[in-house]
Length: 260
Image (tube, rainbow, N blue to C red):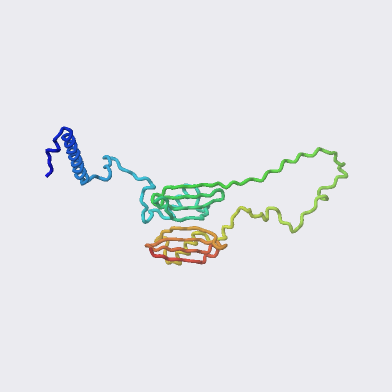
């Protein structure tokens, strides 16, 4: 047994002993408080004030499995925002993609005067982003007006040649100027390709589906190995279809079908 009396034998030992006991008691109390409070249920986040709701930003919304807007609906929204009629636009890209956790439809199209790049929110239909470029054409410089010649003395009327004698008659095989106008070089050969709508119909017919049963995820046109090709992609009941169609003849060059 330790001799406790020796711990209080002198005033210095007594003070040191009491100080050690106080430190030990304080340490024990701190351990007890920590154990008690660590087992209490503390909510992860503070409750929202009554009458207010936290609205997530567009980039914080989770990306759904299926967009609520179709490709055709988003295409019309982009054309409406651009103020362009569908018959005046030539699309080079139309596909479904993801941007910062949300579904977006990406479109690239152009008219005679401008080019457009759009991203449409596939769930809300809002314009996510857009870029517009204007084609600038320069008119040829007009020639300066010729100065009128100084008046000169003319020969007497008797010696002047008659108009019908000095003017050479036009060749008989030359058509009038308005008979055969030359085509403008700026006009594109619109009949060179079958068109996107015809390419969609060919792909759907090959797959044995109708447009009302599928959701298009990509419509585009590109040059592959020197040949213009339409790319048509769509989904139906978890099955993805991919088609490459000759833009000039409508022949199916390649097709894939994948189950997801």
